[in-house]
Image (cartoon, rainbow, N blue to C red):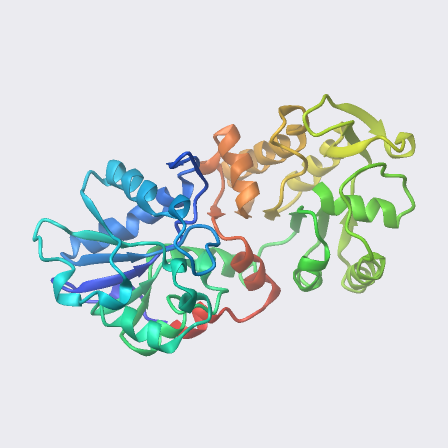
Length: 392
């Protein structure tokens, strides 16, 4: 894979830079700028090399329609403030654009193409669309690892039509993931949340080959508890997954991977209500499990303290309500302290997990924080990502 950092003679070139700026928007404002902060290094690198930058990105799922609420304009404004440079948002139909007319104003160094998913051809990996995109630049840089599991025009097909390179953030993601897949130090522990076991079964089975400890939290743990015969009331659950869970336990047993799940829980009657700690045999029909309890937190903290590598994906509870954010906060704090003390190597991934970390202000307390969700998990599962394959 060719790296943009290794390239000479970039001056004067127009770089098509694929980023993932799929950030949360509310009232035309960005509510979480983590992904924007992450791409500033590659922007500064390319500006220092005297290139012109044409950014390709998307927000949301407009499904080939022009949806004003999913414009990249708020993201342009946010990035402008951060780098103190004027950015042009190009809203002209992509098929009418010409490379030589994109940067007629010599003071314009950065331009955004409007939401690339306003074109249905993007998600079907259309060849004609990819050629038109490629015609707008001299070279292509993928710095959107979190989109690289998508076989989309601006991620994979475009690489067939112009020189293509990996960006700084993509390099960092792959280096960090390599550490927890091949250059790993034991004992290795994984804390995994989320609501659906079925969507992560391949990942979980693959991880049991490498892990010493696999800890289930969040909605996913509810399925384990029900499988084990506990009453879980109105808690979030995935139906018809007992066979899947049985496979996970058998797979873990064969590979000497210990599985942990909650010993006690924090429950509520509603998401925005108050919390009450209960043992597993105390739940009733009206209870919703919305966080892990103190005994479980103590057990998880002890496992973290005895680990050399920790991978965390998925919050421990409904952290949007501070009454049910205790488990996630305690996990984040413990991993952060052990990481800063150089006792372990930590990799954290997934949008909800990052939201937890942002809430407690601990983004810099981990060795690597991945903004990727699906790509992060598919890479760990051992799947070949179309965006990475295309660069190779």
